[in-house]
Image (cartoon, rainbow, N blue to C red; front, side, top):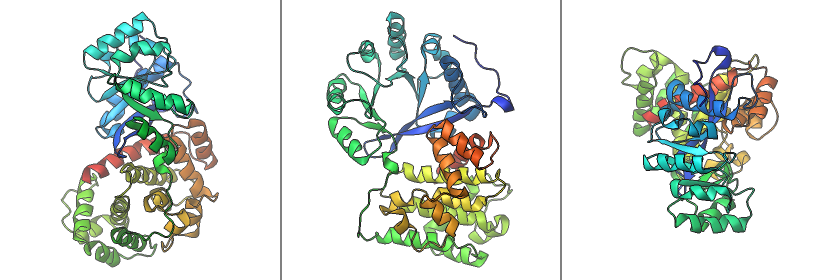
Length: 414
């Protein structure tokens, strides 16, 4: 086993992105953690076992699994050297899924280690499983099998689920990029899904918005006004008692530099100003709008908003508060089952923000696309987009990591 990496320096810090794994009801089951070697890299250039070791030690020690996964399962990729090198000394048996990469050569030594780990309570997953391959020998010892549904013939995808499910294996369909593929694999017997199908809108033309969604959208519109006064913010928040309580709970849980508990919206405005209160209110409105959709949507929109805002602070020409709105509203079309043009109707946003949300090229759009590429582990695109905005090399990974920590504070308050 390679020696564990020393404490990372500023020039070689740990950077990890994550991809959600959802169950058949759209709830987050866990996250696969994706590795990036250093701020200046555009891909993982370290050898595989060192990369895996850095993810394991970094996730457990530097960032913390709670920050990265919110207490859900962490799927961690491991290579052969790491698997055979006493991996049980690095990770606990609970909360972590050891995912064997497809590049791991399956021989008797690997089979014996997997049998032992399974017997001691560790859960293992096979990545990019291929039927009738050497990986079949590991099936008695694994809890999850991941099938690449994009690059596997549909008839094979459909046949694998019933066969392996009977052996007690939980089937995970990965690279699910459309609602149709999700429905088909779910019908075939897959119970976990990885891919960005849930980020694509299912348009319901002509359908009226439910009254509760309409109320949240109107409040969101009012809170989006750039010239909003303190008195207006207080009035808008106070008109909904449950919203007032939630905003206060969020403010008190968010580690603001205040020494006393905030007990009223007026006090919060006095101590913190308009922007934090407006931001918390908009977060809650967005959570209300996404009530009928996959819960991960609100989480993802929240992280995008904060990451865009933080990245904007490093740019020479950008309004960080406007970037928060761009990220926060980037999934509004999915939440409302509308085209983005229709979803934005009535919102008093700037022309630049509207253009960015509709996909038109500008600085705001480039920042959003950089954040989206980073969250998906598309390192080359993310680095190029951030560099095109004149952001320092470390700005994007630092912004994403900070957004994850901030997001956990918000979610705990929610």
